[in-house]
Length: 253
Ligand SMILES: [Fe+2]
Image (tube, rainbow, N blue to C red; front, side, top):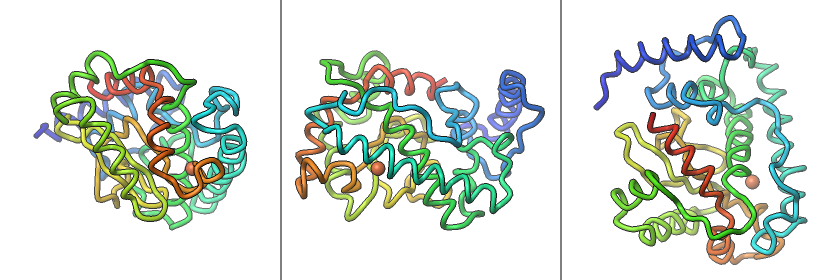
């Protein structure tokens, strides 16, 4: 187990550097912030999620045939956009200084906020990550240190994809499947309901999200109807392994 006092000191040092880099005067530290969440905030801009919806990194039809253009358009421009809008309303209503409170820090302290904040901070963060976890179909696979860690923690790449797929298939109702880096720097697979995620202090599973899969019906129903397993099988073809591998490397630092 990592020395938490050391990690917090490192966090403070790193936060200072990040603060200077961001050009802001101070970052308010939640007292209950976890070691890894601290790293998630400070480790790289790859982990710093803006409170507003960012441009989709590809066109609506870029992931076809695995994910159809209409699903992508509705998912991004209506569902995800509504989470970002409602998150803005919640932060205003609840007095969150979004300039000085990283979204990841808010998530790690989510029990102190309303249900509206929980649902929409999670919804916004999860979708911003989800878009980046995908890219037009390619032969890419997990590479380098991520592949080594997958083989170490799950036995094989095939065992990993099976376990992750099962997490998505077995999520009753709406939610997410996650590959995450736990406090002991091991890769873990889990699932959260609704728009919860492993950064939240109320979550049963905890860690830095490395790869996320949206298994809400709005993510697949137009093309796949009730066949969630088919959506998950095809989704593997559009995972952006370059992004996911880089994210893992950053989280390990
Ligand atoms: Fe979604």
